[in-house]
Image (cartoon, rainbow, N blue to C red):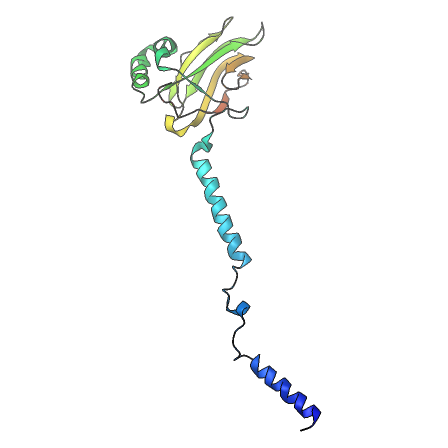
Length: 197
């Protein structure tokens, strides 16, 4: 056998050993890695679930922002005093619900920001419509039912009437002008203390 023939035979033997029927190498016997597409899909589902959870729970917000101020809660011991601003025909029912912690009351304060400011406003919170309040010299504390089920933690207050430069004390507060129409204010509230504790 010539030198060339011997080298060809060795190569053929090596090819047979490393061919399709050869024993798998340790790297080849390991499980295949997850595809990048599968990783991206699973990651997207986890992220979407987290976002949906936050949105459906009201965001878990407890501190108000300029875009969505917080409506404060009337404490249990202050319900009777706060109820003075409720309509006479609904007062007893609303107070009983608040004292039983079934439908707590929210509290806001209205005042004018300048000497020539003020006017007459009403507050709409869900199905509730307050009596008319004339915003004059001193601030007025106004109790209102929460504009959505208390457990929701968010809703909308609507200020109706004809008033300008009226400060609405929420957390944080804001100045409203209703001379050109109503002012809608998206609000949040802390649902951890329904009895105003």
